[in-house]
Image 1 (cartoon, rainbow, N blue to C red):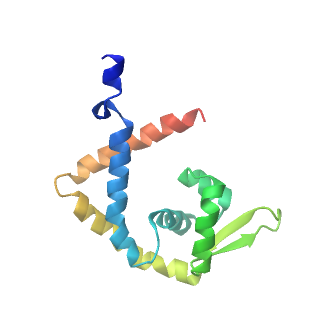
Image 2: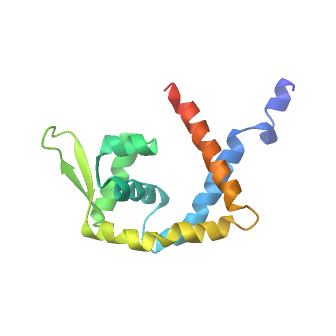
Length: 148
C-alpha cells in the first residue's frame, strides 16, 4: 500500500470507530431525554449505580476521562439533584461522588435503555456479533491504555 493509499478514509481504523461511536450515541439521545441527561452523564450514572460512591479520580479512571472533563458534568448533575459532591474527610481537595435518592431512582427508568438500544442495533446486526465487537473493542482499549 502506497503512502497515499494509507491516507484514504476507507483505509483508516479510526474513522469507523469514530462514526460508529457517534451513531450509537445518537441512538441513546431520545432514550436519555426521559432522564434529562446527556450520554456522558449516563456513563457517570452507570459507574455510580455499580460502585455507589467514588472519587472524581476513580470515576475518571473507569471512564477514561480527565478530571477537567468530568467536573463540569458532575456540577450540572449536582445542580439537577442527581448526585452530591462531598469533600473527603481525609483530603479536602478530593471530592467523593454519591447519588442522591433521585439519582438512585433514575436507575429503574434506565433499565429499559439497553433493551431499547438493542432493538435498534439488532436490525441487521446480531446480538452475538455485537458481543464479539464489544470484546474486540475492549481488547483494543486495553492495548491502547496499557502503556499510558
